[in-house]
Length: 583
Image (cartoon, rainbow, N blue to C red):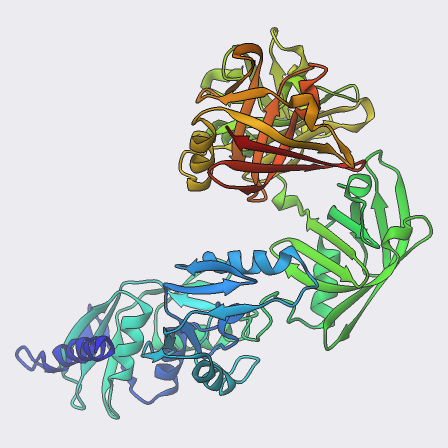
């Protein structure tokens, strides 16, 4: 019924344009110029239809078909996790779940019924998986869908209709691809349409062009058909490119190492932020954090599984392997090989490197929680979880929820032309330093000077995560009464008895008080936040206390109920487990 109503609406729109006759004057000029018309069955009309068609390729990770798209909202189960898809952005959540384990057998189930939308914006209700698979099989992988995606119309657009005697019969303004596509679908053979020029088009790279005639319009649409990769195949990881394009992408800019696993062992700390530069002659240089340069070679080949990248070094043996390029896109490349081997690198082009103004604005947007501070190689645990607020006029505060220190901050370029954060805080010398920026995204900042052992990692938290339902729910549960340590293990060593008989009280000011026999014995800091990797974290900080310092850490929340919360912390030496239960 809804489809019928939509079709009737656009038929009415078209009919209004055709039946508008006014005084039936002969029309040879519109807005003072000679009027050019487009025949309904012409090649230009077909190009307009294809450009205004519904793109069906953006959700190929769900339906595996470019001929249609699933209509929002709908629900899927991804490796057992239920996800509501309400926008194109939600599709990234599905890919993120797939990417958590690169070698598993990913399982995606769609909860039926669903509605699909075709290129002409007509809709069809699908009742089951078999019906969807049958329709998807009719699509030809590689781009046989009815659209041109590399260029778009900028709306609104004014159209005029004419009869065979060149008399204007109507005028209509269209506001979207759907209206434009349905309008042209409603034309019959012999109908004539003209477009009010100038007309603006936006290309895939964001640039705009202006056309002033039918000929210029047809030429622009025709040339745009093959100007970009429409990604119309079934591979959502965007590795549908030839060897020449892959090599160009690899050699275009340097690549920064973000994660390394070899034979099941995590070596990220050893290789983090090494910089790799690939050259067209098959050479690759790697610069470590001390500035030492290591040389090697690279080569690529293509298989049915995708691109293969072979790396060979004399010294970097953990990189020596034939790697499958599991994913490349969004300035990131992911390499994989069987046996627990993985490398993730981030592309660093000059235009992508943030300047002082970018860093300054990001710092002022939200609060920033200290994840790690090192001063001359020594980690300062007593500052874990403290909150920075970078205020206008160069003022900065640092708080543990009870006491607040004040100081100044400014942003500039250091001698190496790297944006740096200068903090001066007399009450807290542990953070007073000129911190050069090493890594920046919207949720985490990392500063360090390797040669002198200074490091600062900040986690972004906006409005204290007040809009995150999971964070609020966990905080609320923790603030309702006393909690006891049900288990504390450091590796295989059970240390639960050290905390037996102690009551932990968590308050809304991020302070935690520990009582023994109803007598307070120590206070500390606690926080529940969602980190840059979208994981829930539990910060506990009892400063340098000999006993409670053992549980001072930024813990991952492994599981949580109304009366039990299980925390885990892993480092290169051991795995710690801390479990609280409500009294």
